[in-house]
Length: 71
Image 1 (cartoon, helix red, strand yellow):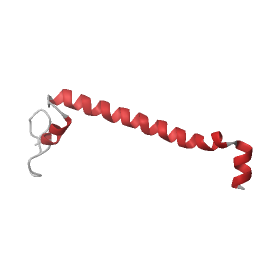
Image 2 (tube, helix red, strand yellow; image 1 turned 45 degrees about the horizontal axis):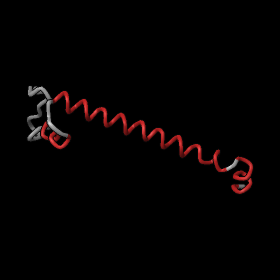
Image 3 (cartoon, one colour; image 1 turned 120 degrees about the horizontal axis):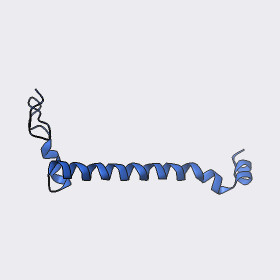
């Protein structure tokens, strides 16, 4: 069945779902890079490596990106 389907549809039609998946993953990559860049600009951190320092130093006292407390 697979051989007959491949012959009838051609390799291009069978590869179309993989191409759509690749386009979707590329769009997600662009979106995530833009979000990281915006976060770096918003927080004033110099690089991506400094972003984890925004997180809470301990689980008991989280702080938001503006330096205030969640409580």
